[in-house]
Image (cartoon, rainbow, N blue to C red; front, side, top):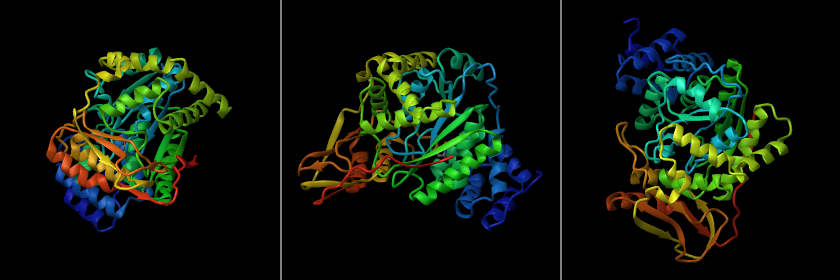
Length: 435
Ligand code: URA
């Protein structure tokens, strides 16, 4: 072996820096199944504690990006713009957003992730549609982007395989929260998409990986710099993640809510972020008038054009599009439990982290890499920050499969809500932007 993995782990553990050659070797050998999970897990934990230098991060991201094919989408005759979220609870924005943008004439080659830690993943949500294939051959990318304007896929054994493996490993080893690991995971996927522009939704708050604005700014600046070094324009918007987005937290129920938004309905926060992000993506594609870009996005919802794109996308990727036409077909677990307000007052917290971890405990996320998610379980939130409730009023309805997971989930989720006497107000959704 060219290098000793144990020595490289020790160097990183003791605060040293690894060379570009060593980092590329690690990525290559892990992707080739030569380095075992336990050694990479140890290295990831050392990175969580000791971070990476700018040079290390750049080399690590490049090695991940080139662990498989990099898409060549020159034959796509539209601007290629994508969006990625750093991860939140109830964050299903990508699902309505991608068809909205495609309906506006932009190509969206979206490579997403699965649930990570307490956060849900776009791929797990899309797989609630029977037959929906998140793996398509690279040759289908070009034709689908030209005909429909959007693909929604995951990393594969040929597309960013290093992220596919490291992402699943981080989820099961407590090594998610790290600026270099999140940045390299997101940017390796996005830079493999041959983009003309990228919008990043950097979440801040209890339900995000970055709990403070300062941490989120560091993450945003790091990813914007990686984009600039690659020549890809990146805009990062910092958004509030102290309470779940929308009402649904789970997988199938989040698909139902996404379809509602595509029908011009759905919760106001999801609709607002979808339109706001669509406008930002149209600006990245060259639009100069933000208000006109907003109006264009709104029109793609109002006219049904975005919903039509969603139907075509699902059909193209092997899914049963009748679920989009009739979202009552999505299977939601029949057994339900209502969490009730224990007093009158105003909702001061609706803690996204508590609700996200409880949803994972119900089976909406994974405890081990090999676990499968149960698409039917989750929460429907009835009361959010700024709402007034009376004693006994529902705060949320839990859909669950078996009683033991319900007990664990309730222990985590019930304290999520605090109710106070003084009037409270819904938080601002958007905190700031970095370009
Ligand atoms: N999204 C990703 O793709 N990777 C992360 O590490 C976090 C969010």
